[in-house]
Length: 492
Image 1 (cartoon, one colour):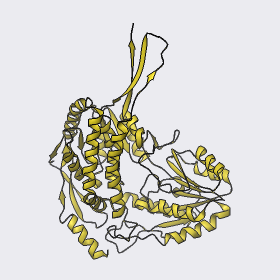
Image 2 (tube, one colour):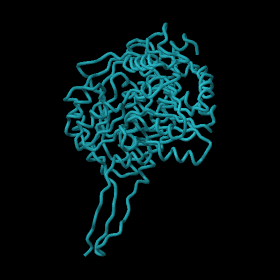
Image 3 (spheres, rainbow, N blue to C red):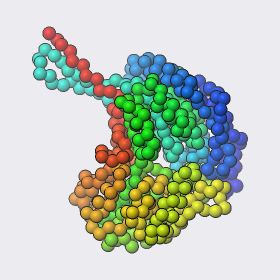
Image 4 (tube, rainbow, N blue to C red):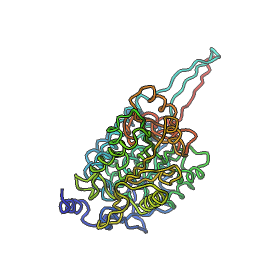
């Protein structure tokens, strides 16, 4: 698709700015205040975003608590049926939601299509997970008593989601939340809320009971108002560790699931399949323009294969095409916002001033519709003192660092405060197990990209690190969004 055809596709998608409304307690509600939503793709205003008030949040919570009390008493098979209907309705809207998400987020259309398809699958997955979420009968010391366990919903959740996977990460909480009998009030970021609000049409079509899900977009101020609302029983968050720490401080003793930042290392051992490692590192650094919590933020490479690995990464870089994300030949779209672009600027400036070299890329591309189009960049000679090594860059950047042996590979990978997901490349089974057991992360991927994720895997941060707790994915999220209840019955 050339740029003319891509532009025509965008015009068909949003011929004029969309007027968005809150999805509040099962109804579409107007607000007095709206904010413009600018596309990182075109720089144009594509929607007006409603700004919720404190009273809107309070009404959403009241409705959620009323609805949740009834929903908790609905049988598991009936809750599963609703989730299946939502999954089907989302699937029928894949193209529309994907196009809208690309326009507001900036990722290539193929990635957005995969996101929406996966969001729909989550509702089907958790419908089935629910039907296998069982308790057990336990031995008890008193022969006149019986002890058994079962699951009960936590209650009403405040869900705060990020801008990189707007629809998918909403579904990561809402699907298991509804399945286990909870109600949810979702706050997507104001600048990537259009697709999430549009997705609520699928929920309506599926017959969602009024009040079980509300969507109130906004920034930090709206998030703070949600934290101050005492009617929330629990809080689910996906986003940066800094924001997560702030949210947790306001959550008090309420239940939380926190999925926070990563600084994903890919460890390349001396016996690695280098061609495969280079492909994985490249993909892990450019997927969603590097704006992924488990992106390849650092490549830590054994000295004996360092230069060969770099050469292969340079070959792979030739296949990364930056441009219009509606063009099917493009696999790298613009960054989403100026904050992340400025962070990329800072990391590159810091690294090059301290001796690192940009082998490809190195800055924003001029002559594009916005200045958010950032070149895919490989940094050679990155050292632990550099910000690009110590911090999550969250852009299309592959910093490469050398290590002398397995011990140093492991020490460098574990040297920062974050611990979400890592990858290791080796042909040796014993070495693979050693790294899998000693890398201080929640998940270790052997011989594949740090960006590997499956909807059925328990995904989250490691203990002792600042990447959060709880698990997103499979039955583990259902377990985190429900309480284990114990009943002891005296038969005497």
